[in-house]
Length: 510
Image 1 (cartoon, one colour):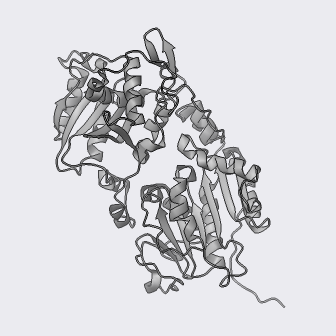
Image 2 (image 1 turned 90 degrees about the horizontal axis):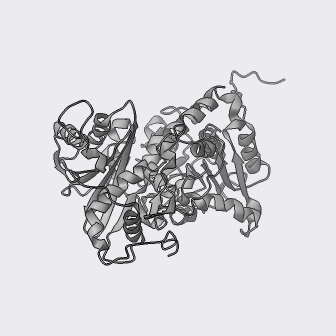
Image 3 (image 1 turned 180 degrees about the horizontal axis):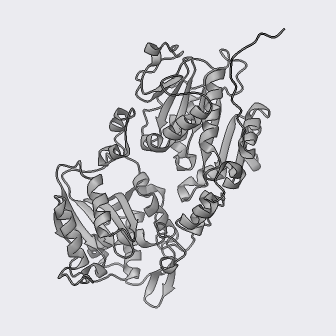
């Protein structure tokens, strides 16, 4: 006779993509899993699903939950993982705690206790997940991992992933001989929008071509959001199509269709060597408990030189773009970018800038804008649009130097030449351009997808997408235009003696 029990079971129905991932691990015994899934496919839930199974199979074990930065982990990965765990019946401050040791709640101790607990998820059976950010080379140090989960993996630097994480996934099977997830690596991501994400999609090619010696241990699973249609509102797909920045973004983020590469780009020398990551991880670890969106201001940035003025560059129109930079002698650093749509106005985008940089004690800004910023405002006030931007900044306590008043527009051909000489950084004559990758995602897409053509006056930047009323504008050329303005004004004198006419093929190679 069976003993009666009051234990309640929760029915969890996996969609087709989630089921394939589950079977790949549990039945086919795959241990290297790469999931390229569209938004809304259930990536966050599958991460939580495997997290729970890893914890259950290996009490007291140490695992890694990897993000490209702590900012990504705090803002996106951790909240969605908590939601997934709650669906699975695991609750924060009951079954696990974040950023602290759960010993005082009666939790078992881990097999290998960490040196600090600020970046730890501690489960009641002693298992721990260490939050590992790839922008901090020390965050995975000392970890002897029994398995790895990675979120938004297309953003990862594959070299840092290897040295900071993969080399730590080395715990032996003697303690958990029946654990099917021992030593697993499970990485999830939507399809990459930038060149940096190529490493992720190239894994599929390597598996198909059996490049890996143990290729049978690998699985690469692709799925669009349609696979999870029954769990999404019927109108969600239409809303996403209408609200996405462009058809390209909808195809990539929802339908999981990889974007085609722009071959004849306006910035062919721009590549990953021009990108950097520099967060203040001590600050981010310190706010891991109880933080709000307002805490993710400029205090999280470690790349601001506080005694140097910020450069704010504006591109006008119904779609407003703003790029924030600093000129540091041999380096020109692009710190952050903003944008807004009509009916939001210039005042709104200036407010966004001022709110983000409000913690700075010294508020000095050099203001740059396109030549149309010298036009008089249409409301009859005796002010230009540039004057209005200066007024709004001063109202928020900023000392403003207007660097574009009365300046003419530069030719596309000249900007093409200057930008690519600086991106290439092959001559000490030209400062190098360095862009904060995680604060400028839309700008990077704008740069990578800006097309070029040969015109009667030399190379021209193609602006057709700006005139396409059906396309939203984050990933067209607007942000790249805002980027161009101060670069040209600050450094065009360095072109003296360079060729006056260039071909579109001059900068295609290294």
